[in-house]
Every structure is written in structure tokens, then in C-alpha cells.
Image 1 (cartoon, rainbow, N blue to C red):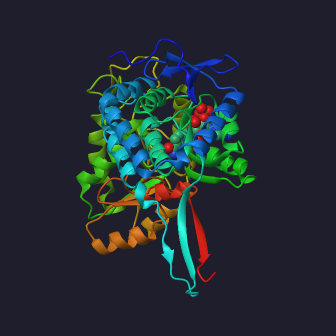
Image 2: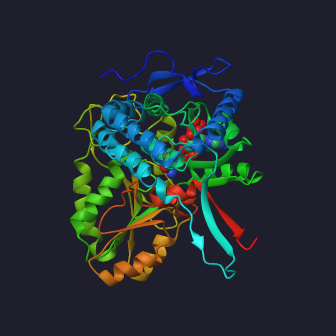
Image 3: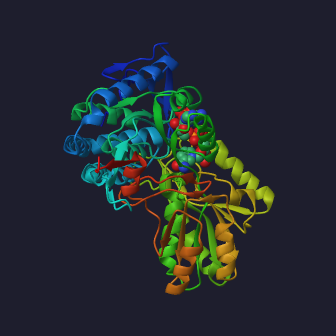
Length: 485
Ligand code: NDP
């Protein structure tokens, strides 16, 4: 399937598909081959300003006055078009992100349903009447949109993250500017074509491309942008928080993680092994919620490890285009270097790195790293504390429930946690004690568009997905009317 355009990708600003006014382009790569995949036009600062202005005008003149039914109809139309082109978009993600094609197809399956979900919950953005003490006063609330939203996207799940930010922002009545990662802009550009075909009025959705330091920074600090929704690294998230503070913008941050997978001695071991291996392999471990700290009760450590190692030895690392491939490359040379550096750091700290899997059908030049366990890790090692974002897990033993909970919470992050135990009381005690935004018991953490998602501690601020995402895209007004006048 030929899914990549041969001419440089243009941006969508208002009603225009256009190049940047300074005429610059940048290359985007296929991480499996390290070859240039396509060229993309880069926005200059005045192009960012033009996109914000287009979104502001579309909001003021049209979008904020639309009815829930009108917005819902457009989102449903987009859902249908997405379903029509799902396979094409999956191939784009495989070529640009390096996801195995089976995974790309699977991860995009829920996108039409996500758009339909947000179309369906629009009426929930309503207010209420409040029975205040003064009976003469009618007191009620209105849930209103915020205006122009900047949606800043990372490279690990470009399409699912775009859709899950876009749906609630538009449903609530906001207009948006999408800023994909410079590393993986192509699927978002394909979505922009569908948004136009669905009939969204010009300016409601705009897309600008370029680096975070220039285009991203200009966008988030623009005075007409009311809300920023960002997914990416914690350092960048903190920077965005600082650069938007002076204007007191509404900011939602979905940041990094170092999630624990806790295996007690009464666990369903095969299932725990499947979840641990899945988190290591899926998207080459470049998943914010992936469990990267395996905390295993010492009495079952050897048995758990033996089963996990058997599974990992069988992993097929290779070309993402091959349907038999389970794990593709990392997204970029930078990311590969970073992961390999952390493996070296772990060895220097006294952990024992061990690599598994067979590399098949993988071009030499691609950014491949095999699944890696850091055996005999300790909870305070750098490699067990910092987000690596690759196919690497630290294996750490614990003695009892108290120690497991202490270790689970010994992290600056609090995105997710998984625990395996058949003891219901222990499961509930742990679920309450763990400082994380998502906890899964006897299963893996899989985000879904209809349940709230967001981190504790340095893993983020605010919630995305579910009803909370709709509220996050609104502001609440309280109105009083004195009926005695
Ligand atoms: P970043 O967090 O830097 O980038 C995410 C997005 O933010 C990109 O679109 C980027 O633009 C943009 N951006 C960067 N700086 C700014 C800024 N000052 N203002 C506005 N937007 C900005 O991710 P990296 O690619 O640098 O990855 C670094 C690490 O972050 C990873 O190794 C991983 O640990 C973590 N990460 C976590 C993710 C998650 O899902 N939680 C996802 C991706 C990364 P551009 O890239 O085009 O320059």
C-alpha cells in the first residue's frame, strides 16, 4: 500500500494547506531503515500566529455557537472516515513510528469508537441549579468551552493520543491547533485530511509542524491560546508549565512514568509473565504506562523469572512491516542511544543486563534494541528510578506486602501500577496505598477512551479521556439571578 506522499507535507492553517512562510522543510525517517521517509514543511513563528488567529476566529464566529447535535454529527462523520482509512493510517504509523503492523492496526481499532464516544457525551457538558439559602435567588452553573486549545503530541502513539485529545476538545466547543512531534508527524497529517473531508469548518482544526523549542514554545505562549494539553517527557512538561504560568493558562500534562508490576507469591504467574513481557515488547517499551519495574516476591522470583525469560527468548524482533514481527525498532537514533546508555549505567550500578529475542528481517541500519532485563536491580538505582522509554525492565525482589508498597511508591512518578495476587484484601489495601493514577489488579493497564487517565506526582496534572476529559476542556460559570427584582 503506497501511503506516503512524495511531495513535502503541507500544514493546515485555516482553510489553507500551505508551506511555512520561511520555506523551510525537515526530514522524517523510517526508524526500521534509518532512511528518509518524507519531507515536511516547517512553520515559522508567523505561521503559528496565523494558525492561532484562524482558530480564534473560527471559535468566535462559528464553533462556539454550534449546537451539540452539529458538533456530534461532525465527530461521527470523522469516526466513519477514520474507519474507512484505518488500515492506511496504521501503515503510516508503522513506517514512521516503527510499530509492528499488527500493533498499529490493533491500537487504532478503538479510534472511531473514541470519536463516537465524545460525540455522545456532549450533552453531559451541562450545568446544574443550586438550592442556595436565599429563596429569591436562582443560582445555576454553565459549562462553557475555553476557546483555542494547543494540543502538543509526542512520538510514541501519535494517532491515538491525537484522537483522544481532539475528541473532547472539539466536543466541548473549543477550536484546536495540533503540533505533532517533529519525529512522527505523518499520521496526524493524514487525520487532518479526514477532518477537512468530514466538513469541519476551516480554522476549527489547524496543524503546524516544527520543533518544540520554536513552534511548540510559540504556540503554548501565544496569548490567544487558553488551554494546553501536552503529552511527553516530564522535563518538557515542566518547561511548558513554567512558560504558560505568566498567562495562567489551563494546562493538562500527561508525562512520564516508571510503573511497578508487583508479583506476590500467590499470583497467577503465567498471566503476570504475559503482562510483564507485553509491556516490554509493545511499541518497543516506548509506552508511558509500561511497567518498567518488576517487583517480585522473593519466594517466587526464580519461577517467575524462568517463565519470563522463556517468553522473552522467543520474541521476534524485526521489520515492522512483517506481520510475524512482535517488536520493531525504537523511534530514532537519539532514543536508541538513550536506551543503550541506560543499559550501560545499570551495569555500572551493579545490575546485570540480560538481552533476549531473535533479530529477524531487521535492516542493519535500523534503531533496534533487544528486550532487556536488568537483573538484580535495587530500587534506588538510577536505572530503576529514571524513565528510560525503551524495552528495558528492572527486576527487584521484595520480602512482604509492606516492602512491596514502599518500593512501589519510591518513585517521583505515579502514572500506573499493576499487581498480581489472589488475596482480595491485599489487592484492595495495595490499590489504596499505591500513589498512581491508574491501578490494575490481575491484568495489565490498558488505557481506554471512556475511563479517566492521568498521573499522580510528576506523572502529570489533570485527566484525559472519559467524562473528565470533557470537563477538562470546559470552564464552569456560576450565575445568580435575583427574582425579587
Ligand atoms: P518531548 O517531551 O520533548 O516532546 C513531546 C512534544 O513536545 C513534541 O511535540 C515536542 O516537539 C514538543 N515540545 C518540546 N519542547 C517543547 C516546548 N518547549 N514547548 C512546546 N512543545 C515542546 O519528548 P522527546 O521526544 O524529547 O522525548 C524525551 C523523553 O520524554 C523520552 O525519552 C521519554 O522518556 C519521554 N516521553 C514520554 C512520553 C509519554 O508518553 N509520556 C512520550 C514521548 C516521550 P518536537 O519533538 O517536535 O521537538
